[in-house]
Length: 270
Image (cartoon, rainbow, N blue to C red; front, top):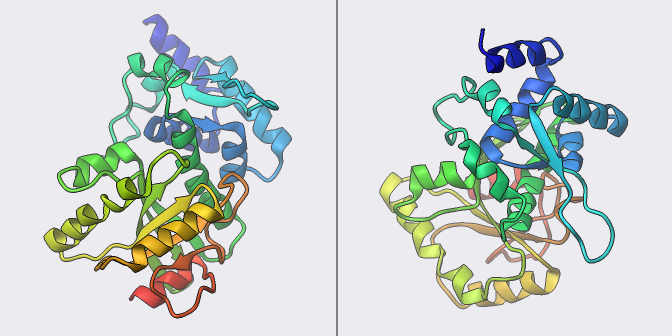
């Protein structure tokens, strides 16, 4: 028996089904913070930290803290080479391939780590909301790499999701803004989404999560002067603490600036 196989068997004896779901998400989305893992899977932060510690003890994940100018960042968790082996058989064929081991070290220093974490904030927020609701679920969460595989000829969204709540379901593309892109570059993405709609005969809304209310207002003003065939809605602020399923979305071109929930968008756009 190889050392890797023995290590996997040893680790498997300490894993719960919830641990396996966490590892699966890490395989698809590269990095999750302890805050995101807690929000998506746990009611008790202490229990969440303990499970993260166990996953690290058995060698399936590594954790690091990116440096901040002020304060301390949460632990950022990534799969180890052994963790990659553990989740290799979990991919369902519709998500991105499990990342290669050589990519893991680069996560700690990649320039867009904050952007990747921000995107995952939004989707983990939806997973957390679904846990506390009676009839809601995040049925699909595709990463940027999965989206590029599906629609890369036309556009490369930061993520794709399908949110189900009660009798309503809404598909959406997500564009996450960290405040570093100029508005013309953001607007330049819209023809790609229109091309996807034309090619597939499916009009999928585009949701922009903006860095600040000021950025959001500026984008609305620019969009008001252009013509779009694809529905657009925006939200703004700290994605780490917001509830993306709630009434945070402002529709572009709507008669009212009143914000609506993610499920409400399904009714409007249907």
